[in-house]
Amino acid sequence: MKFKYVVIHYAEIALKGNNRGFFEDALKNNIEKALKKESIKFLLKKISGRFVVELDEEADEGEKGYKKISEILKNVIGIAHFSYAIKCPCEIDAIKDTAVFLLSGKNFNTFRISAVRADKKFPWTSQQINEIVGERIIADLKKNVSLKNFDAEVIIEITTRSAFLYTKKFGCIGGLPVGVSGKVVSLISGGIDSPVSSFYAMKRGCEVVFVHFHSFPYTGIESLEKVKTIVKILDKFQFEGKIYFVPFADLQREIFVNTAGEFERFRIVLYRRFMLRIAEKVCEKEDAKAIITGDAIGQVASQTLENIKTISEACLISILRPLIGFDKEEIINKAKEIGTYEISILPHCDTCTRFMPKHPATKAKIEIVKKIEKNLDVEKLVEDALSKVEIVEI
Image (cartoon, rainbow, N blue to C red; front, side, top):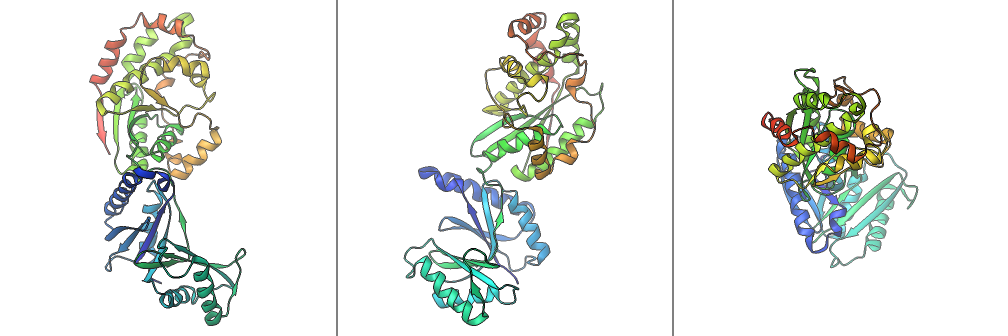
């Protein structure tokens, strides 16, 4: 069966009151971007609180085409669910005929009709539509009604000009359309956590710019290539990506030289403080409102509450940690779901493991860390790193 229409629903956006139009326009724009990026021919309209995509007559409407469209729409943040539908006039006889057509040839014994009236001027209530259409299916197809344990369901949406009927909903990500919440800068390492935290920022409507710290040529190029691949995967949620590749080796060497003996255990905390300072400068350049990290309480030495506090003190901009209460299994499961896990687990040399102390501090006191930093030209180290940044657009 060929379906010419796709009915798209959102959830959270419907609660936005007077600002709802702004969010709807953003979602409409993102749906158009996603479909055009894959060369889908279509016409998109907002009808009675939902979006309707009319597929071009020349488009491939076979299973391959539907699968392609499904994969596109499932990754558009802001969509709650969508369905392939048949359109008919807002007339009860036409609706009955279409419902019978939808179910004809299907293997089922019990069914349910679920009507929704976006247009309250339609002369029958939702319950009356359910009963009228249900009676027709019983008469024509000899099937039984079951409101709870049904084999097939026909959903009928009554809008101002047309009715749309379908039998299946495809669940999506939900959330807010990318871009409506402003821009953020995400520290992305190439590991499992930071791509997931970036995804959750996107789900709350943020446009994400990425910053990756590397020690090339003292370490391999693997982490740079991994990050490029991960950002390409994440781009299916926000359509484009920008990565700031920051050389960190010289800065690490300075920290190494100034943290001999008793101060060795503070190296990781110092690395992280400098990363935040550099990311804050990138935020200024990008007009971003916050930094995103993949921190989860207690997961590694730098993520104890004491160290998080000491590290965060290095910059003034807001630092958001979407994964702060997640355990590792939850993060891994989400990484698999969004498609980054298989890339993230590929081996690479992480920047923070260079000059790794044997026993990292887990409760670094800010007074000691600042004492060490007095021996470092903090501003110059930050500016030197920024002067060597390579920006890659995906």
